[in-house]
Length: 401
Image 1: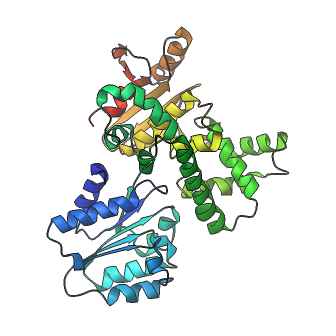
Image 2: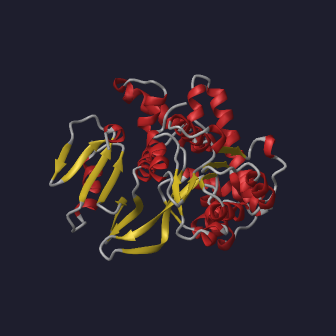
């Protein structure tokens, strides 16, 4: 197993606290493997194996545990007098599982870790029953730096291998089959179909699956573009892609897509007034490989993909990320954490004077003194334009944080 230290360290830091640890993320991003890594850590640190309960609800071994009472009784019978570490993988497959988690947390000396592949995990009764008593650990596909380490690529190969990352994305299992393009495409298609069917269609009882599929294709095509339900509806109706679509249905479908973690929404914020704007946010796909499998691998739009990769990397680094508006100009990303704010522009190249002027102008229109960065694929020594840093995107992705 490839050790994903960032996530493992978060679990270790939260170990033996009163909080329930909730690991969320898109399917096949590594959540189950993370639990196995944590189990291995516990064993190495003198926790007895009989005091570690690891249950993967995708295994047929636990098919008979269908509801919270069955799960509670199953675990209750196995708990002894010593502290127990409870690792529940894909727990949302058990009806009303949150009641079990809450009861176990009250009745026994347990340290609980759970994973789930959709945000309904946290929008259920869990947020009510355990308000203020759980920690969410958001897991993402491999960063580019992890991708290099996972594949044992040397740093000197990073420019060449970055284009492999742009094509296939960062789902860990791709490493095993990356030399077989047909298998990669089949694997990515299978994951996409599973997410759409299990986490969206089946869960929400969707009947108009054609509308859903066309919304996903539209969003994948328009990654990094300002989106609204009106825009999507007008496009689908004017091109007669579907018989009829309405804004409310599209809004509902967008919400479902976000909850499945197949995509993320970045809202727009007015930088001057520090207010959140309700319209024209942008959507980004959770993994570039999935995006390319939806649209095909032949015509990859590097510009939008680069923006998508930067957005996901900022999330990995713990930033809250919005789109910035300052007067008539737009800033690609406003990245904020409790300690800092950084403004980012992302462009494939600054070699064109008009592009350079456009990217600089957006950042120069911001009146505060927070850090401002342009990320580009240009192979150049880092530059500085009146305090605005220009950094090679690949260098930025692998920098030590």
